Structure formats: C-alpha cells, structure tokens
Image (tube, rainbow over the protein chains, first blue to last red):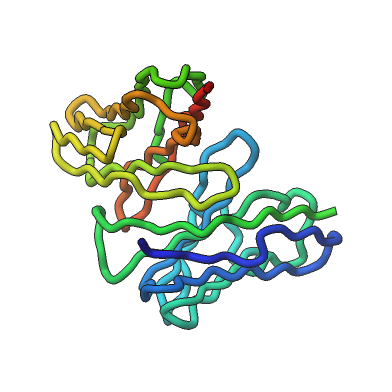
Length: 118
Length: 111
C-alpha cells in the first residue's frame, strides 16, 4: 500500500523556537495533503488542507501565521509551528491523498510527530 | 464540525471472542464513511471506504456495515486475536474532501 513518512517522530524544544515537520509520500504523488492535530483523549482534528502549488486552506480557529504550511512538490508538505509555546504541545499527523479522488479517496497517514514545547 | 460518536470508547475482549462497536454520525449530506485501524506507534491504516446505504465490507475477520439513513456504521471483529488490539477510527466525509474523525474505539484483546 501507499506509504507516508513523517519526520521527526518526536521533538522537544524551548518556548519561542520554530519547529518544522515534514510529510512525504514515498511511492505515490499526493495532490492533496492534510495536517491534523490530536490532544490527549481527543479525536484527530483537521488543521488545514494543502494542495500542491497553492496556498493551504485552514480550518476555522487555526492560525495560518502560526502554522505555516508549504506543499511545494507532489511528494512533500511541511508544517512549521512558528514561535512554539507550551500550548502548542500536541501530536501532529499528516495524511496524503493521491490524484483528484473525492469522497471515496483514501487518505494515507504518516506515523505522526509528538511535539513538546518547554 | 461534524459530530461523530464512537462507542464504546474502549473495550477488552477475550481472545477468540467476537466483538462489535458503533460509529454514529449525522445522516444528512452523507458522502462516504472511512474506517481506519491505528496501532500504537504506527500510522493509521485504511480499512474500508463505504458509500452506499446497506453497504457491507469485509477484510479477513473484520467487517463493517453502513446505514446512511439513520447515520451509523458497525464494525465487527470475528474471533478476536491479540494482533487486533488497536484503536479503530471512523471518519465520515465532509464537503471539500475532508474527513471528520471520532475519538475511536480502543480494543484490547486479552490472550
């Protein structure tokens, strides 16, 4: 099946630091990638949808200046948490979808990144 | 935001026993429903995509049914094995090709 990698798997940083997370589709071209966040005992919450070569679409309540998304190629999307603070500590996970699939298109997930901001 | 309820939130099952759990979602504007299986420290794995009322899908000992009119889907595990221990996520499809996830059904199979 389709494989999505995510790096790093875990990061600990000081408050005020910017953190970049990479999401790569390894064996397919991902026209669309999604970024989710999960707090303890909560569901995966969609943060933004990114389409290759265009600006990301952010969900309501997600600050685009805080969570910078770049989808420069069909296999790579990055999420940068700008000037991270302790409240940004969470589990971030990306997914990628091949082609222009609609409601039936499967999203393939990376393994996630655990961010801890001290 | 779509309200997706999964119950029970967690369950312990004896090896060899069968089990099932529920995903409830608003029945209006239904597009599709995705089920994922998420083992600890791994990526969520796609199990099923279901679109039609009355759909029934099967993958090995795991199967799922869909009722779009009343807004629910059941996932069944037959003859549970320790490797079935995971969190099972359901995700109805929102407009604009987005998914809305429930909190998951955490299954622990006891040897």
